[in-house]
Length: 506
Image 1 (cartoon, rainbow, N blue to C red):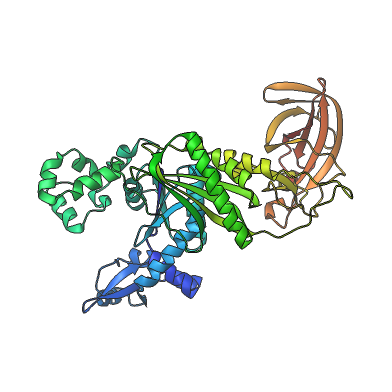
Image 2 (cartoon, rainbow, N blue to C red):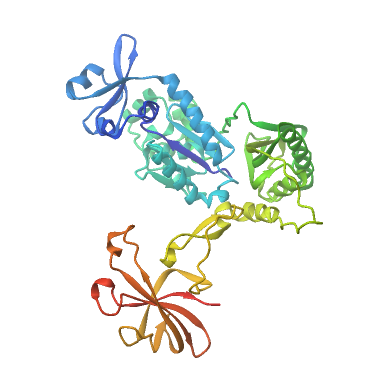
């Protein structure tokens, strides 16, 4: 089943203009409008949030807008530049899915089925789309559902900026929306309102024949597209310089073995093309065009540039079980959507020194099954505060010069956040005699410490005098824990003097 993401950019022409002119923050706080000509009239074509707050809107005469808001900032609209910039934004969105298209004039649409797991799941992916666009100064609303029509409607008419519709619940989510959300011509929307139709649910409960007789087939078609009952294929954007190979079949294929065989042939052709250009693939998309106009997509990524046919074939074949061929596949396309030059290097001779184990193959298999964000390793960071003393890096990231601290032992398992414990201890320097953690009372048999950790006042003012006193303790069962007291045991300003358990030694 398709999962369609619609990205609505309500102030795209103004956001595009400000990014192109690199306007500063002071201008962002002013009311801004774009004007264009419609015949002999000068009309407002776009307004920013501040202008909308003052009552300005698209479609009103420019002279009226100037009269209402004298300090208005006015720019001329450039629809061609907006469309070209939207295409560039769609190319950027290929990082989320191989099936991306512009939803002109103010949005993007992409089918993320089979690709969302590489971004941590639908919730994380949708949140990442919105966050990245907002960081770039682009106002965005994002919705994901089973159908393009539903996602388009929810992105533009739902209250929340981000909407995730669970599978199979499109009708419940779209029903309360106004009929303008159905992408109907405005004259039909006006006629329907005069007839008493205000919500999509009102329209869907009405027999189709009278509606078709009065307005033609478009009303029924838009309803079916919004509810996912009618296929609405997305024509994906393909950059001109993308390396891509394809196979068209006279008879549709559907058996897993047949698909795997042709994946191998396509992988061979793609790797040959990459070798000619000295490139390796970092991200490959397998796009299956089905006979019923649906598209099934499988995306794989690699940690390093790859030209090996067998490895690429194995990664793609792992995705076959997630492909639903339906009535058959008539076109298979394999595209290298992210490539990188491969630098020639001399292999280490086993006669001189031992070769380092290459785990990138294992990393690729695990990352494509679990998602890139689920596979990482820890690297040391310059900080004495335990929870800040490490950072997550990619599994194959190069080693840095940073070293793990060896002066004081650290637990093999650090809790994500310290857990409060009840203790019996003498202040200010003694370790606890016993402590209770998660309902179990433990008597301390041995202890070592304290190791005093000072707050990092250059990061937070509240840590100017904060300290923690860490102890390594061992209970009567031989289990060892890393606990600390917040504060120095004498001065209340240094901490709450409560005790916490922060880690467990192996």
